[in-house]
Structure formats: structure tokens, C-alpha cells
Image (cartoon, rainbow, N blue to C red; front, side, top):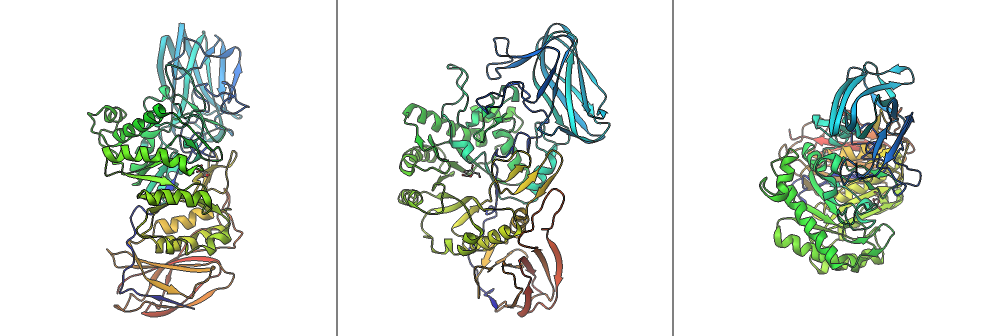
Length: 613
Ligand code: AHR
């Protein structure tokens, strides 16, 4: 087999932002996941509208008398229910399913909103089955709703902690919270360290958020002060900013409650912290994801379009502008630098969607001509919806179209040439969601083989992200997923390792290459223009080692040794909490020359970084 590289020539440039991540609150990606809050149902807002099994006391255990109350004595109009706790009683929170994880010596910020007619002493304790996990903290409460805070320092490590709040006199409680001090980048109301770090380690070029089906389903009405409480409304960014106790929680499309503690400000901040371009997705007043309804309400459409313009102001406006001022008040006076925004997700009704999309686009482009407004092509890789959506997008000169597909590994191996034939003058592609159906190394190999085709077509495929990003092992709605976790541990799947290899070794231009390739043997070569390094990326998904002659073509003699990073494992190997059979190995390859031989192991992904001499 021969791999011929034409290093005297340059192929398409590869944007820094090409590979990114798609974050959605599915599989408890946010609450009980990336969002570091340790108390579940902190505001007593869980309801049967979120999940038939929920009540306002889900995750809480009562000793004595306590009841959830929804009346005029509430904390505020958006935080409807509070807990009325009788004197001499206590409530205990079990955390996210398995318990609260604490680390010996670490500090935890406890806070609660409380009111009491007669002065009350709250007793705050953290325990597990073996006893105390921190010195108890007394909190004196008096008068109307006030926020009280205390720091607990863990004296022992545990993954099964419970937080108890007791009172000697009748008291009302809301927003009972316990947060690790140690969040990602030390951000208040921040992210769980290990999970955020795993995302950061991918060096993502962009962060698409907050969904997915999460965004464009349910009623499109927002929270409305006039008509009062509305559950199961679509995800609307204004619900998710400002003080956390004023963010009205909402039913999550994936069958649980979303606190919105992780909201638009936190997403923008996280994108900035990890050096990723933010790509928010707003609902388009049609419901994809199998629901297929279009809301026909011109006034509502107008409001959603205005909300989107307000979002751009929230992200980019000066601190003196209406929404820029709110961003500054949350701690970020400088703009976030939003450049891309997506309208709608996986719309199955292309004509209805496009009629609305056009109005969004016209309004956004009129006010912000520099923003790329991304459209979509439905939920499939092909078919009538896909074809119609593409036709509409192409005819209207849309700049970028989001494609999604979840297919078999065989499909990914065989569709490497998918983008070779895309019209270079048409819309660019945002491959916003894709995965082969599984978390084995065989799946990762198929995706890696496919990614060589994405990279070769970097002039058309401008953005690409595997999906979904996160899964909580004990409560999962969708498999496969890239990063898995429980309360204490997290681990990257085989797919994560392949993604990481591509995402951290991109190069900035394609170098033309050809190989005697088959579905099981795929390659792409890129160059890092600054260093001059060539990065030869080869996927051998077959069961046989591939002895290969690599001809680099005209140019100076390369350095005689190259750094190789290899992923190699049995095709059914899977990373788990306890074992990580799929992990990169670094080695040095000798004998690099203008023409040299190299054998790529069976079932492997190999990246060879070849420097100029
Ligand atoms: O990634 C999981 C789901 O897959 C997304 O919410 C949706 O867009 C797609 O159907």
C-alpha cells in the first residue's frame, strides 16, 4: 500500500474553530453534571409536569413537619414553591441520586434563603452513613426573606453525603444550596472541575449550546408574569440569566427538571474560559424532534425575534446598553464576542421552518450584518426533508447549514467521500451532531475514518461536533455519549480519545494526499504552517496491520524521527469508570525520509508529526 503526499501543494485552509463540542442538558449533563451544585431540587420546584414521579419534595426527606407551599409568601414570582419547616424539624437532601460527594479538606459554600416570624436557629450538618463529614454550622434567621451563607469544611471524604437543615422555630426555606469552592477556574455558580477540564482538554474551537431537542420543543411561550406560571415552555435564554433564585425552573425535554443554574451567562463564560467560540441555538417556533408542529402566531414570532436581537446585545453590546448592562451586572463588562448563532434544531417541517427562519435572518442581518445565522437540514443524513431543507437553504443563499446524523459504524466507514461532492459555492456545513451507534473502539475507529473526510473538505465543513457530550451513568436518556461520569468519577469514552486526537492535532491547512484506501483504511495529511510540521493521520480499521510506503513528495529532507501518537485496541474495547483500555500511546518513529515505510497496527488511529529537518 502507498500513501502519497504532495507537500509542495496546499489544500484548503482549516479554521481554528473547526472541531468543537455540543453541550446539551441531556443525561443530566447540567444539573447533577457539569453544573457543580450538590443539592438536588434546591428550590422545591420539582413537579409532575417535569416527570410523573416528581413532587416538590423529591430528593428531600423530612423529619418532623415540613410541607412545600405555593402561596403569596413565596420568595419571588419566578420561584413559586418554598418549604415551610416546623420548629424542631429538619429536612435532608440526598444530592444527585447517589449522594453528595465531598473531599477531605475542601470547603463547601452553603447558602439558603430563609424567613422566620420568631428568631430561629438553623442547624446545618453534612453526614453520611458513618457520621459527620463537617463541623455543623449554626445559622441565625430572623425576619423576612434573606440569604444566609456558611462555609463547611469536609473533615472526611465521601461520595454518599447528605445535607440536613434543622430549625428550632418555624421557618420558611428556599434555594438550599451547597457548592464546592473548587469550581472550574474558581467561577462562582460554576462548573464541576473534572468534567469541565475534560471538555477543556479537547481544546474545542466552539461550544454549541444549549441543545438539541431541548431548545425547540414544548410550548414556545416564555415565562409570563401576566399569565403566571407556565411549565414545559421552550428553552428561552432570558429565563436563564440574572440571580439564580430568580430563574424560573422548567421541565427539560429529556424528562427531568432543569434549574437553569447553568444559564446563558455561564455558557458564554465557559466558552471564553476554554477558548471556544460560543454558538447558541434559539427556538424557531416549530417543533422538530418528532413533534412536528409549527406555531402560527405572528406576535409571538416577533417577540422571539426581538429576544434573539436582545441575546446578541446581551453577548456583544456595550456595558451601557440595556442587555449589556445586565451582562456587566453579572460580572462581565466586556462583550463576549458572539459571531455565530443558530436558529432552530432538526426541523422536520422544512417549509414551515424556513418561513420563520427567513424572518429571523432578515432581522438579525439588518441589525448585525457580521453575525453568521445558521440554518438546519432536519434530523437525517439524506431523504425528502433533508433535500427540501437544503434546496431552501441553497436558494436563499444561507451561509451555513447544520447537519445531524447518528448512523452505524459501517455507514461512517463507507461515507468518507460525503463532502467531496458538495457545491463549493453553496452554504457551508456545520456538522452539529454525529456519532456512530456505540462507545466501543470500533465505533471510534469508524468516526475517526469519517473525520479524515471532514478534514479533507475543510473548505466546506466549517464546524463539527460529536454528540451528545455528557452522560451520567445512573440516569441516561441517550447512548452513546462522549464523556461519562457519576458523582465522583468521570472518564472519556473510546470516542472521546479519538476526538481528542483530532481536536488537539488539527494543523491549519490540508496537504493533498492519496492512498490506496478502502473503507477500512483512510488518511488525511495536514500542515501546521507556523512550525512547518506535517501531520499524517491514518486510520486502519481492519484486523490486519497495514504495511505502507509513505512518499512525501518534493521538498526538503524531513527530520529523521517523528513523534507518533497511536490509539490501538480491540474493536470491542470500551473505557469504563474502572478501566481505560483505549488511551493514546506516544512513541518515536525512526527512519523518516522523503520516502519511508511504516506499518500501521491493526485497529488503530495513528498521527505522525513530521518536522522539517
Ligand atoms: O444529541 C441528542 C439529540 O439528538 C439532540 O437533542 C437532537 O438534536 C438529536 O436528535
